[in-house]
Amino acid sequence: MTTLNAQIPDSLMKQMLDLAEQERTTVDQLVAIALASQVSAWRKTESIASRAQRADYAAFDRIMAKVPNVPPMPGDELPPGYKRD
Image (cartoon, rainbow, N blue to C red; front, side):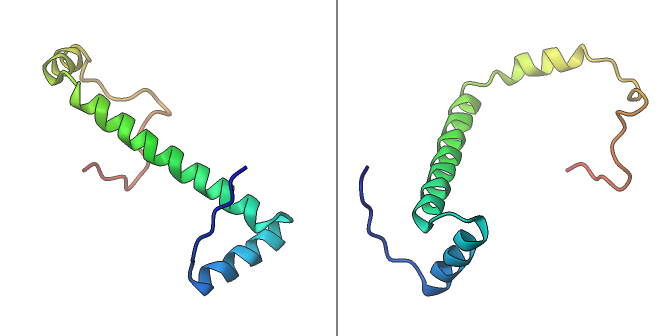
């Protein structure tokens, strides 16, 4: 294991201490979990961006043109009030 020294705001440290107590774990464990989660999210973002650069939008449009324009099956409707962007 590697030791990491970091400076964080006092308010964040208090939140971490409270959460560690609530979860019955250590601040070290919470920090490791949070860091692993954030690193994973950054990697996924990089992966998605890389894949988006390789996208073939003409092929996507050809595939989507084959999808019939019919109402959704019962139970597959969008929830009331849902707005598409």
